Length: 99
Image (cartoon, rainbow, N blue to C red):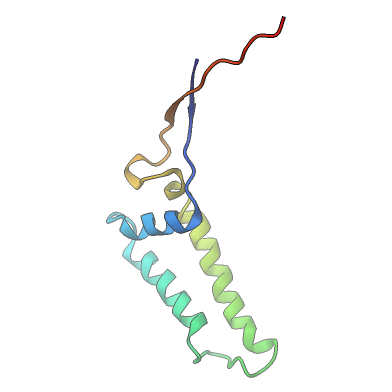
C-alpha cells in the first residue's frame, strides 16, 4: 500500500526557508526584520515606560507581523520552497487483518 503524506516543518525552519528563498519578497523580509527590531529596541513611538499604553504599539507591530508571517510561511512549512506543497511518498506496511 502506497500512501502519500506531506512533511511538515516547524515554524523556525519555515522562517529560515523563507529567508533563504531568493524569490521571496525583499520588502517582506525587511518588514519582518524591522518589526523584530522595533519590538526589541528601547526607542518606540510610544515609550514603554507608560504602562499598558506603551505596550500597545509593540503589540500592534507583533500582531501585524504575525499575520503577515502566517500567510507567507504556509508554503515553507511543507519543506523546501522549490518543492512546497508537493506530496512526499511514504511506504506503510499494511495492517494485519483480524479474523
